Length: 137
Image (cartoon, rainbow, N blue to C red; front, side):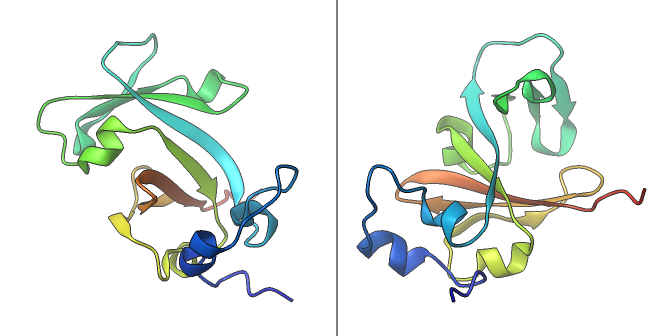
């Protein structure tokens, strides 16, 4: 049995997978694909502004593939790698456990109501880890 709360840091750098195998993040840790965030300088229709990050986001709510465009204003406080390199986001059940042993470039915070997220970096690529407080039915 695999401990799903353990870090992948050491394992990810030494283990290899076959072409037909899913990544350890989904296969072993149970992380679920949520979206890909792509930095851009081009304004997109229906952008939403997130003032605390001085950034605009668009596309996520209408993309069947979870593509989110991110456009940043001067003075954006986010790490340079988040502003310049596309990131993949995974939904996790326990954000604190998922952050154990990772290189955190943006600590856990709440970008919007009911959402907690953090950014890590792996092999030069940003990865967002996100969890949601589900609304009671």
